[in-house]
Image 1 (cartoon, one colour):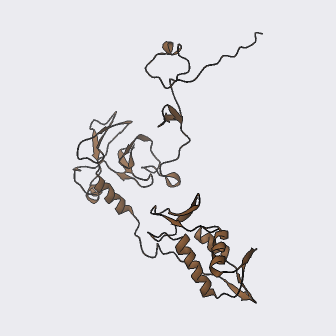
Image 2 (tube, one colour; image 1 turned 30 degrees about the vertical axis):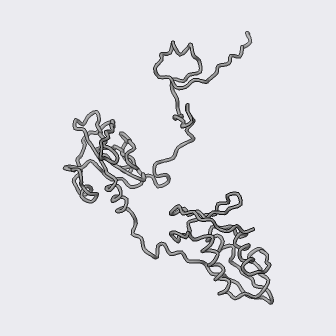
Image 3 (tube, one colour; image 1 turned 90 degrees about the horizontal axis):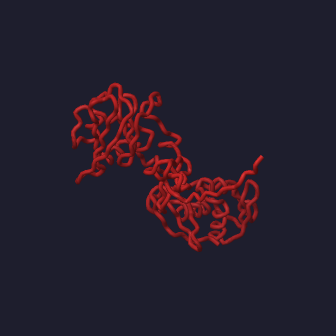
Length: 291
């Protein structure tokens, strides 16, 4: 049996769609079809590193999943999807608004538009999308056609309408919903020592390492201490109200956002600087480093 001979091909070409198979034989290494690749901002192509559902774990389909999606098109800050006999729009992949409406006119508010009767597209098949942009339009006008329905559907949404839609879908916020209660210490004084039994739980509520909270308290109390299973021991006698004042001070300095006052924050160590970053509003503030 003849021994196989190695042959090296330099795969240094890109995607070529304009040449036929015979011409491509003269330039090995170019691609005719790419799967799981996209255009890279650095030039050439890059592999797509996986994907996730639009709406992630809470994703839904426009008709509840009972019908095949006949077309999808990104639009504004959401997605237009065609399914069954209707056309839908969603900003989050969870809630869908039917947009094929009868007698809809430019300038309709969100409330007026959604209240109008749906225009059923009987026998809708695979859909094709085209986008037209014009001066004075925030997102342009999208045209939708399919293989069976003769009329072409057009849809345009402006920024104000999109903002109104998002506002209408916000849950009713109350002061109680955003109230964050700073936990209280639990413990007792034993001789010349103060024993706290829930410091780990307090740190967990703050989403901070318990070592960071302990270091802060030891500095504020000007004492020494140690952690043991189920308890933290501070040398000295400290009243619970005094300890709670220090816990509140820690929360205001290292947990609560100085702008929106929410606890959805984390600490980011950048060289010798520590930054408090709010995950709710994006505020960033430098805080002191505890060494």
